Amino acid sequence: GDHSCTFTYSAQGGTNEQWQMTVGVSEDSGLFSCSIWRPQGKSYLFFTQFKAEVKGAKIEYAMAYSQAAAGALNDIPLKQEEFEITETTVSHREGKFRFELSKLMIVAKTPRDEL
Image 1: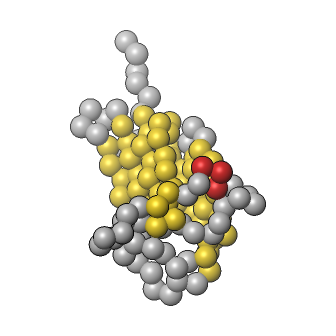
Image 2: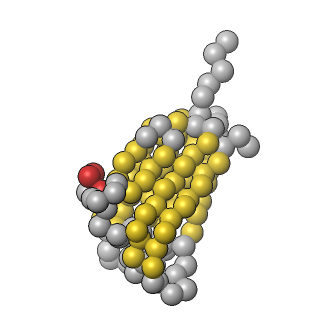
């Protein structure tokens, strides 16, 4: 529809890593979600930068993780200082980001047409 999610990054290593991206819209089209993650859990990529951008919605909630849940392991969130969230983007914070990313989740609210 009118929503999109774009993930751009720069990384080294991690030969043949499998990643997934899922986008979804709630039944009433009020919420839009975008998730990017490595199903096997921890990524061995050395991320120098990342940015996820949504179009057609404003970010309500976002979280980035250094490790994604897999088996008995849980998600491990990045420290708040490692990334920043604006109305439409989630990105690494230069000089603070520690080069590890395995999962990124965004929930955004779509604009409503007032009657």
